[in-house]
Image (cartoon, rainbow, N blue to C red; front, top):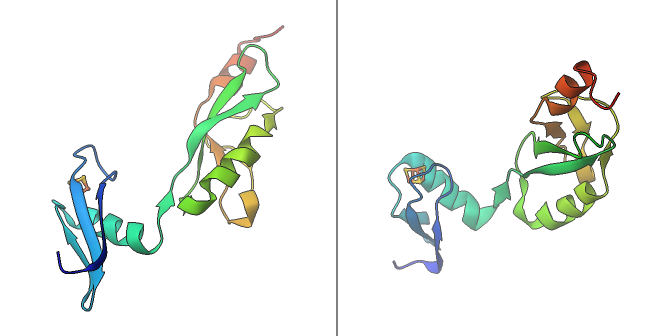
Length: 131
Ligand code: SF4
């Protein structure tokens, strides 16, 4: 590939996991190995502005469900993921929130919220857990 700063990586957009090679040239970003347009868009973003959706868990105040699965409601810059995770480690969910509830707003000022991806707290609270 006659492009500068060529990089090889695995596409994570779908389970096919295509092996991509991308680089910047005079005509813009060149991508090889992709089987679809989404892979090309992913490769271009990886070169110019890589982002990730953060999927993890947050501690809760409820002994019967000590962690709650969460994710960001949109992608964040890849370079901010470590700082984002450090923030999340300091969180404790104290309300029996349901799926889709905002657990933390505008985290790190990135304009992204952290949302619950499980109903475990709401369902267990409704069932009288911990009583
Ligand atoms: S290039 Fe297309 S088919 Fe291949 S992993 Fe990416 S999204 Fe899937």
